[in-house]
Image 1 (tube, rainbow, N blue to C red):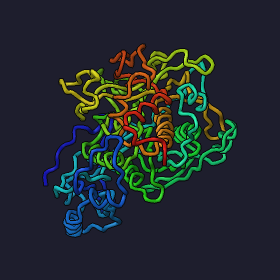
Image 2 (tube, rainbow, N blue to C red; image 1 turned 90 degrees about the vertical axis):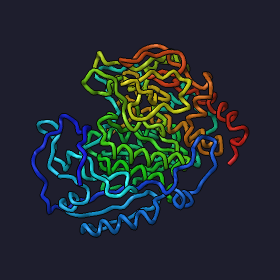
Image 3 (tube, rainbow, N blue to C red; image 1 turned 180 degrees about the vertical axis):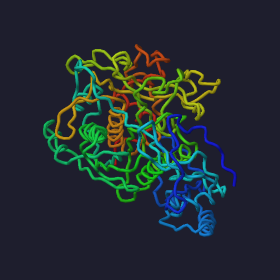
Image 4 (cartoon, helix red, strand yellow; image 1 turned 180 degrees about the horizontal axis):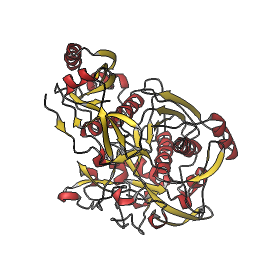
Length: 508
C-alpha cells in the first residue's frame, strides 16, 4: 500500500528513531455512518439513542468485512461499538504497517519534549467504510484555552455575577439536564468543589467522572485549572443539572472516543457538551479532524448542544506565519463556537464590553476568523463572513461570546487556592450552563441551535462593536471576534420560544 505524506505534521516535531516493529499498538477504526445523520436544526424531532444507533451507527456488513481484514493481519479485537462506529484493535507495529501503510517511529515535540509514537504519513484506508484510523499518532492535538492573568486584574466576577449581568433566565437552574465536560488532562478534588460552591452560598451540582482510553480524574497538574474552571463556571450557573466529566488522553484517538462516548452515553444521557480544548485547524491530521466532526454530528443529531472555546491567541491562533488561523473543533459547523470579551460592570449592569485583546501585555486575545476546511454554512450566509485564505468562503468563527479577558476574569478555586482565570475556556462552560437553563425552560433540547440563534435578533445579544483580535475588527452584527455577541439570556429565551412556533412552551 502506498501511504500519503501528511503535510499537517507540525514543524516542531522531530524524528528520534524507528518504533520497535514487535511492540503492541492499539488503534480505533472509525466507520462511516450507515445512513447520513438527519438534519439537526432546532426545534427537532427527538430520536432515542437506540434508534439513532440502528439507523445511523456503523453498518454491520462494513464492520464484519473490516473485522475479517484485521484478522488476516493478526490483530486482536478489543471492543466494538456500533453506535459510536468504532472497532478497537490491537496488533504489532509491523501489522499496522502492513494494514495501513505507515512506518511508526519515535518522535518528540521541540528539543526536549516527551517522546511519543507517531508516523509521518496519513494512514491508508484499506476499506471505503473506514473514515479514520486513530492511535497511530500519539502526539498531543490540543491545548487548554484558559489564561492566568499576568497582572493584577482590573476586576473579576463570580459565575453568579456573570449570570446576572448576562440575564440568565430567572426561575431556572438546569434541573433535568446533564452537562458533559470533555477533559484531555488534569482533575478535580471534591473538597475544592464543596468549598467553592459553599462560598457562593449555593448547593453545588452532582459531579461524576468517566474514564475514557485510560484517562482519569488525576488532579495535581496545571491542567487542573482547566477542569476546575469548567466545572465551577457551569456548575455555579446550572447547579440543578447533573455534571459528567469525561477524562481522556490528549490524542485524536482519545478526543474522538470521549466525544463519541459522551454523545452515546445511554446511562447519563447528556443534553449539553462543553469542550475547552483545541488546536490549530491546519495542525490536525485530516482523518482525525474528519473523525471528530462525525462524532460532533452524532451529538447534535441526538439533541446535544456542543459549546467549544474559540482559542486564546487572537486571529493567528498562535501560529507564526503571520496569517490568520482558526482553532478546531471550534471551527466545526456542528458546534457553538465561543469567543471572548473584556467586561466591566456597574452594579448589576454591564458598563462596557469590548473584544478581548490583551496581546500587548501577554494576556491573550480571543480567537476568531474563517475556516479553511469547512464551507460557509447556510445559517451564516447573511452574516458577512469575510473571505478566507485562497478566496475560500468558509465557516466564520465564533458564533457567540462572553467574558474571557483574564484581567476581567472569573473567580475560581484550584487545588486549594482561590484564583482568577480567564480565556475562552470559561466561555464554553458559561454558554453550556445557559443552554442547560434554556433547555429546562423550553422543555426540549436546543441541539444544533445555529439557525435559531442567528435569527434571534439583536435583542438576544449584547452586540460587541469595539476592538479587534488582530486581523479582524468588531462591527455591528456578527463579526469574527465575538460572533453575534454575548448573551441576554431572558431575551434569547423569548426569541427561541417564538422561533419554535409554540412547540417549546416550557412544559416537560
